Amino acid sequence: MSERRSTPDRLLLFATFALLVIGLVMVYSASVVSASNKFGDALYFLKRQMLFAGVGVALLLAVMKIDYHVWRKYAKIGLGVCFLLLLIVLIPGVGLARGGARSWLGIGAFSIQPSEFMKFALIIYLAKHLTERQNKLDRFARGLLVELSPVLLAFGLIMLQPDLGTGMVLVLTCLTMIFVAGARIKHFLMMGLAGVCGFAALIISEPYRMKRITSFLDPWQDPNYTGFQIIQSLLAIGPGGLFGFGLGQSRQKYQFLPEAQNDFIFSIISEELGLIGAVFVLLLFCLLLWRGILIAIKAPDLFGTLLAVGITGMIAIQVMINIAVVTGLIPVTGITLPFLSYGGSSLTLILVSIGILLNISKWTD
Image (cartoon, rainbow, N blue to C red; front, side, top):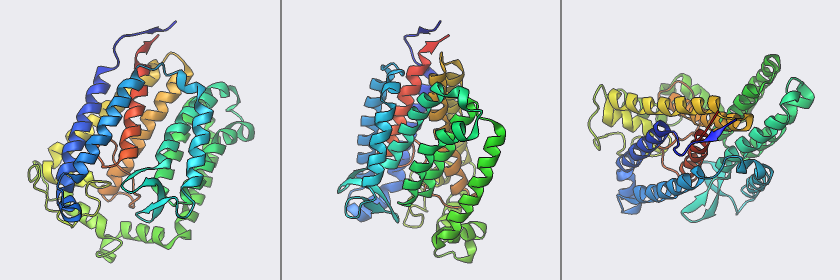
């Protein structure tokens, strides 16, 4: 029988707030030049990120006190609302386009990204659904495909925006949950083969995606266009050396590295804080993921385990993809680095997810 502890996982709290503080400092450092040039306010991005962080922390503290079983009751409603938002964002004149993708809803500078909410909603829905249908997961048509149906539908809507990076994180997170719940390995191999073929088709179907692949293999083929971001990212990481140039001393943020405060903030961290600073950030992520895995293992029921697996897996997948992109190991995908990159929807929902993890950590066998 399980009992509830009064205190949440302290190491998880430490890692979360340490990453959050580093993120605020680095968002300011990475954005000060572009904020001054575009908005005439060096603190523009920092003030907004602090607002998002404040809202996120408040929600984290509130959610941490809510019994995680409550989320199970609203899983279907939340998923339905998120599907509706994904449809609305595709309406011309309603959805806001940024970076070539119609992924946002809002007015002016204040907006939300429905695909971020969908990741959160699918984790809760799958945790509920897999708990109720675990005994059917050894079947393919009536087991695995049933669980994958809402995942593939959400992925399809996200690809209409299009946003391949977010779609990849969503699918990989859900597959991790389904695998942990007990799906058969041979079914995963079949789906993996189909996924590789589908992924190849998605790349070939859009010229810009094919250019990203070719620029990833050799960014110097087109250093002024498709290979520009990767080259500038590596020019930030490499010269940083062991100790870096010092906080605030980045050279690449002076209009060389696009999206320095967003997807490529790890490049600025490496440039200013060096290998030591970059490794420290990675160790904080490892600490957070370790505690998340332990919470999943010790959760008193399958729903809690799968919920913890989904949240921890989502963060781990985003971190791995983002770091791989900025270091030139995989093509550019447009994935933010959790806690560190600038962005309201992503930061707020990550903190809410951590709040759920912290509540699960209060329960022990």
